[in-house]
Every structure is written in C-alpha cells, then in structure tokens.
Image (cartoon, rainbow over all chains, first blue to last red; front, side, top):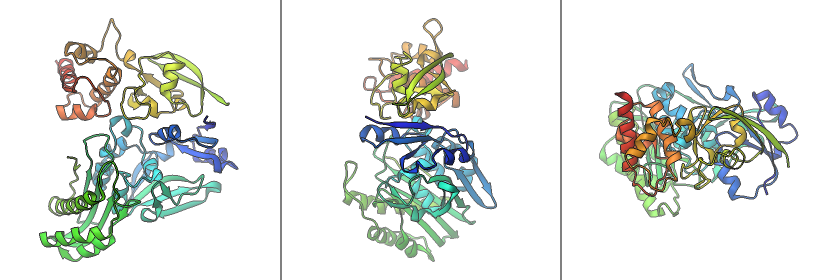
Length: 294
Length: 157
C-alpha cells in the first residue's frame, strides 16, 4: 500500500514553503517516466509527491554571454527541437532524440534524467563532454553549483541531498573551432537502453586536436569522463594510429559489467570501436551528430 | 487516505473525480471516468496502448500522474473521430486492415494523430519513428505504416 500526499507549487517560493519541515519525505516528480514504474516496483515509505510541472521558470532554454542554460523541466522533445541546443550543443540534441520513444520524450525531462543517475542516462555523456554544471536549490534557498563529473556517485546515486532540487543545467558554448560527435549504441531503434554511448567535444586546428573532452555511458557504475584517453589524444593529429592507441587506452579506464543487453567483453570491444568512430566523425565532419543504432 | 479533486476535459467534456496522489492517469481514465478505450497493456511505459493526447501532446497515460492532467484537456481515440465521423486515420486503418486484435489501435491512432499534427507528410522512416512507442504483436507494422502514409496523402489531396 502506497501512502502519498501531493502538492503542485507554481513557483520556487511556493515549493520550498510547501516542503518546509517535510524534506525527508519529498519525492520530486515531473515527467514520471522513471518515478511511476519505480513506485510500482517498490514498496515505498510514505511520501510527499511534489509536482514540478507547473513551475514555468524551470522550463526555459536560453543563451547568455556564451553560456547555455537549460531549465530542469525541459523535455527531450524540447531539447531535440531547440535551435539553441541544436546549434551550440548538437550532441545533447542527438542524445535527447535517442531517448525512449516519442511518448516518453514528450514527458522525460533533463533534470529527471540526471537525477535518476542511471549509468546509461542518455543525456549524461553529452553533458559531461560539454563540461556542464548542475545548479540546485535546497531548503532555505541554499544554492549549489555542481560540476557534472562530481554529480554522479554510483548507479542511481548522486550528491543531491533529500529535498534538494535541480533548477537548471548550464554549459559554456565550446570554443571555436570545435567539433563534436555523439553515438548511442543500442540493440534496437527505439526504446533502447544503451549498450555503450559516447560523446566527444574536440577543439581542433586543422587535423590537430588541442583539447579533447570524451565521455562514456553504460561502461562504468556511473557515466564517466575518459581522462586518460583525452590526454592520449591532446596535442596530436587525428590519424588511424592515434585512434588505435586511444581505443586501447580507453579500455583501461572503463569497468563494464555483463547484463541482459551485453557482456562486459563485448562492451569493452564496442567502446573502442565507437570511440574511434566518434573521433573520426568529429574530426572529419565537424559538428555532425548521429545515432549509431544497428 | 488523502484524496484530491481532479478536474479535466475528456474529449471536450468537463469531468471530475476524487483521486489518490500517486494514482496514474490510466487507472483514473479506465476506472473512474469510464474511458475504457484507453488500454492497459503493460502499465509501465513499454507498450503505448494507453497513449492519449494531453493538451495535444501524445503521452503514456500510465506514466502520467492523474493529478498532472488537472485543468488540462485529454483526448483519446474517441475524441479524434466518432463512428459517424471517423478521422481520416481511422478510416485508413480500417481500409488497410491495419487492425487485427485491435488492442494497440487506440494508442496507434493517438500516436499517428500526434505525428501528422507535427509532420503532415511524413516519410516511412518518420512514420516508423512516430509509432516507435507503440507495440503491435499482430500486424508486423507494415499495414499500419501504409495506413498512416495513405491517410496523410488523402488529407493532402
């Protein structure tokens, strides 16, 4: 038997007032694409469902002085269609378009995808590669700005405190000339949880890579940056030989598991293949992103 | 246990019900508002049989809190067309034999209506993507894709 109360604040002031003294029971809900199946599967303690969907100020996607700001309530459909995101973070638009299916994309929010903290969270690798910051607000309006690489702790675990809300996610527009690429590798074209996903942002000068940001999903207990592989690539021209050595290095910094979708061995192999493909794409085609479903 | 008042417009008709905080829209539609055309397939967002339009956007009713539809407009397959005046999509599904057991059809019509509202002349890839949240275990999808394609063409001409 689930015991729950419900509030639907229309702004942040109202929200924090309504959860005062009850933070430990709070469950924030928006798209509900994870929350409702989870509620059915578990036998949860009494809770206060705080519906965020009426808070308009959490919906905006905007650009300000070279920084892109995405309200936590922005849906996958909105991200995939946003001109701002398609222009300045095409790898994020690509990941949003690859999540679930049209019915879930109309509901699933970026804040929810990040707060759920699945190792396979579709928006996490692009946000890691874009060096995004998670902005939160908690009781008595305490605000925090958390670099996304510090945000995830483990499977479905984050640094968020009980009653602390993601308000928006920001990332700096990558420096020109930069190139990026995103590949989600799933076992089917829709409703796929990724086997491996890769997002890269490269600052290039001709064929020379100055700076690399490489992020991976579904190959560790949390979405990760591949720091060693970035070091391997930086300062070098993108050649077949360099890509091969990157594909070897990346295997040292991932720790994939075997599950119903793929074996650890397969994931390790595919990570190398997809990394090479993503780096080639970024280097050759500039800011093109694709879905790499088979 | 605490209940809350839900008021919504279902296919143009103002309705209300007392609902639980965590109750999903699917359960309320079927059990409290008599909308049995909204099908309960998996109740966890895998099958799309419960798809409805929420303020014009196609969503899974099972993944929506009933209270999130408060003050909103919900459209089911019955609101898209009637027996006397079916929507071109509904006519096309019948003409193409895109219905076998019929269980997925209400959700398929809702998803394809949402697709044509956004992309009036979709190609086959776009159609397949548009219904990619809806499972059909009878038709193999081809007849459904043809029905949607034909409805779009007929609407254009």
